[in-house]
Length: 414
Ligand code: GCO
Ligand code: MG
Image (cartoon, rainbow, N blue to C red; front, top):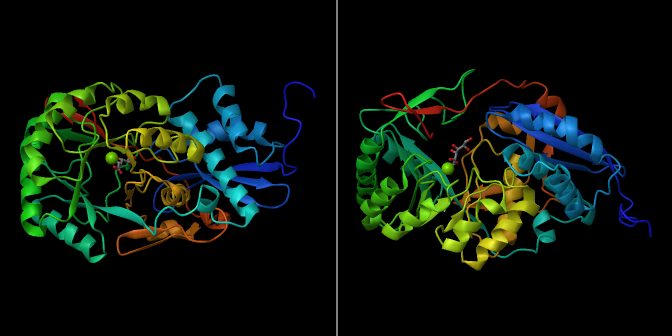
């Protein structure tokens, strides 16, 4: 046998690789792979605020070397794109690899005539529990927002409120803004933040919600990287009595050791990782047992193959999944998450920030949500199709994520 290229393999080849950039309600980047036997596989490649970088990585550097490859060789293709690029990891590279990976899993499951979760190990639970997003510019508005989610059947709710005296803030749409969409404007919006006022205000939010809704409702809160480790430790200690389901991204975790300090001071469960894209971003956190939930998305962590690797390592320390599911993960990325959610043993919860109706003029999905739970659906593959003609009606428009600044003007984590 000649050394080098794999001689054997399936006789199904990748015939084309196209990138569709469309903005039905918000920007999405979708990879469309077609095989020479006529199947179509989709992968989400959306990186909020940097969409065109991933589109170019795919169009200019990856698509040309995919044509003619064995469409069933998922692991070999993943390693070929990961190791073969030489320049490894990072959100752009891993989103591009993720899109190829998910499209190939979509194709493989379609070829088998099975929903993707069956290829990933079959059903490990009856349904996929989700949490919704509630927010308000004040506690009354937030309370109404929580109540609206309870009426939709959610039993777990992420709660975000503007910091008194500052207004706006992460996770909060201004009144009448038609829902929260952080990426907006031709230049980044600059959002003020004050750690002291914020840390002092969060207990009052939990107090109001616990007194209104009782102890059973799972309340999640996203700190969104904005505290130092000791500030995060103080926040966690101040919330112990309210039993949050988790505090998310309490402090920037590039320095993974930072969460050891937080862990020493609070038993509030910690979730992090939506900005992580590789198993190496988690190794210290798993070794230290300093997190309880992995937040990476399929779209940003190297696809089904990449995220499964992370979650299998997480399981060693009883760390559970909480796959990132904001509106900037497309319906293709959400569908991939749902199929993985159903098959995983160490599933925790699935984020569900609801896409706007316009999005579904481009994406037809097979998943469903009812009474707080998802089902990925029984269509072969991911169960999602993309209407390319409809996609053309929604041209890309630049939309930047906000930049945070402290009250003295210093740039701060947003
Ligand atoms: C979440 C995330 C999002 C991010 C967004 C950035 O928990 O869903 O923090 O709100 O800010 O995905 O594009
Ligand atoms: Mg988050």
